[in-house]
Amino acid sequence: MSLVLASLLPNAAQAQPTEAWQAPTLSITRYDEDWSDLADAEKRDHHWTGPFKYVPLGDDAWLSTGIELRARSENYENNLWGSAPAPGDSYVWLRALPYADLHVGKLRAFVQPIASASISVAPSPSPVDGSGLDLLQGFVEADLGPVALRGGRQMLSLGTERLIGTRYGPNVPLAFDGLRADVTLGAAKVSLLAVKPVQARKGGFNDRTSPEKSLWGAYAAMPGLDLYYLGYRNAAARWGTREGTETRHSLGTRWHGSRNDWHWNVEGVYQFGRFADGPISAWTLGSELGRAFPDAPLAPDLTVRLNVVSGDSKRNDNRLGTFNALFPKGKYFGELSPVGPYNIVNAYSSLGLQLAPDLSASLAAMAYWRYSRKDGLYDIPGNLIRNAGDSRAKFVGKEVEATLAWQATAELELSASLSAFAPGPFIEQTGSGKTIHMLGLESNFRF
Image (cartoon, rainbow, N blue to C red):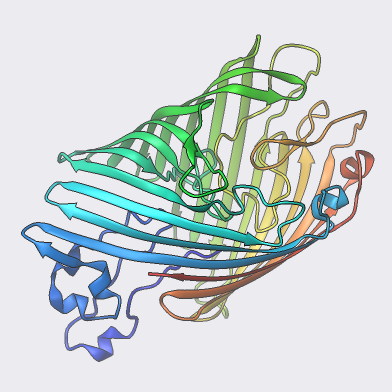
């Protein structure tokens, strides 16, 4: 929810005799922001952050700096429908993400440490709740014209983050160690990847490259269409009661765009490979269609989605049909996301409202079913949270969520969310079945 989309000085046109300068959109990954236009000293004077975003260091050398300071409180009642070790958990996440982006000619060095901590996470905080002081991103890049070569530690965000995301919602985002090459071919950009995920660990400067997992592939982003292949290997995979090496290949396509107040996003992925001693055959299809009414009161925006994610259809054979979302975004279906994109059918509808120029709200309703009766229910990282057992029920539950976001300044956003997830027959038949309630409060300062 906390993605700041604002220029540095919205009213600069009244304050300056020339046309106001429009700042880049602030991103989550930060390295995508291009502040080179602030080489013009007059543009740097448009806002107090200008001198931090472009620091001239001499001939063809300059430095960009910034920071994100986030405090987030999450308050749960009946977490995981009352079956969690701390069903009534309330805690606070704190993190600071400063960065420095050095440009010297065609070379670049990007460094972003992270300081993260949590308060009152029960029964005990995980490394993703807080890992102390560590290096979140640190890489060097060479600009070779149509090709940019990058090596080191970096966050990745591909498409809508169905398979490769930043895990931005939780306290410690996800980074990868390895190599990336971005090749520009006309209006298309092809990203070639060979990386390993970074495992967050408690303590200072001890996050490590995963020894079990690796990711490689190519992602082509074109106007309105993405095509990609992703390869994945996990030497210590576990699905159900089986363990072994998982080698999985994902072929995907995404069609997206907007026209005449309509917007859409359709993405399909097929997966194949081997797990333990058997083959893999899995798939997902996600669709989104929306309609904006910019001239109506409160500028409503209606959106509907339908996601279908395959599960395993037989328990006793060696074939695996459960889709693997690999490294998806952290808040997958909403601010409250107790279930992940595995063996699930999800229907979603939302209404976005612009209450004021700096105040937005949304109302959403969701419903969830198991895709296969033979497979269980998983969380976002892919851990099994409810075994299928003897239940034949498919309906998992329904959820409602309301959010409110206030862009207090160009740098500060305050937001709140209120969610409830009422369990269906499958949850009630396989364990505790209480309604989850969650209140989320967040303050995010970023420049």
